[in-house]
Amino acid sequence: MKRRSIFLIFVVALLCSSEAMAQGVSYLEGNEFVLAETKQVNQFFRRFNGEEDYDGTRFYSSDSLYHDPMLRQVYLSNLFDKQDYNMPDSMKNSFIFNVTDRYSPKYLNHRKNDWYAQVDVIINYENQKHPCTLFLKMERENKGTKWVLANVYFQPFTSMFKGVDFFGNEPYKPGPYLHPKSHEIKFINLKKAFDRLGEIEKYAANEFNPDYLTLFIYELKRGNAEFLDVKNVKFHFFQVDNWYFELSSLSRKNMNSGWLITDLMRVAEKDKEILRKYIFFHENNHAN
Image (cartoon, rainbow, N blue to C red):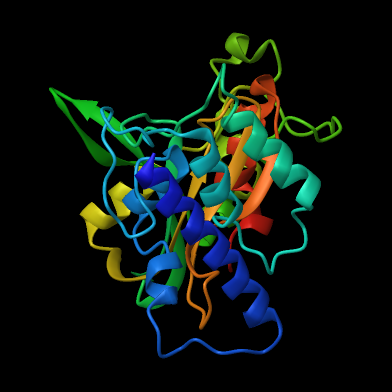
């Protein structure tokens, strides 16, 4: 009970300091930012789940505040990017109440594979520097887990396969094809098909999708590509039923800093694969 009272006092102080900041008062010389900032991704997990005190003290299953709904609601309300007005308060509140429901709470698990790291890097490809996006996921191995490459978005690759409909929503357009009686002429018309390199993927089966990860590893092995540097990292979470959110690191001179939720969407479970494809493959999601 004493621990809970201390926590409530801290919550009131946090809210008061936030109001003071809105009026132009600076606290740069204090430690309020250190306490409020979510400095590590693992700390984001613990605060999301209600497994850490305001001063960074870990909670365990025997502690009275472990997974406490009230504690989680306070922390979750401060785990959003408050300068992003594309996430309305009504949506954020709905998400918070959903994951802190006393009878059906939702927690994050870093060992599960339904969250992805998006790592923006610089690659030297054919003697030119190019931006490249790597997607990694968590994979189990023996009794542990590890990060593994799941996908690559690389503009020099995608530009070669513009005729591929990744999302299955483009209207039908007739294109080149091999005549159904090509076997009678021993497929001699393949020569003509292979001369049309700009449309060669249209001769592939409907289910064909280029494997950019294989191409990427192939080019690395051949020495045509070289990894240079990491520019940015963010994460995509699909773990909460019927929700998706993005986690990014924001550096600011206020309490709303560190690893914060920068995008939030309601997504039916049946539609999450479509969203995954968009994140992986759509050019609007990647810097050129």
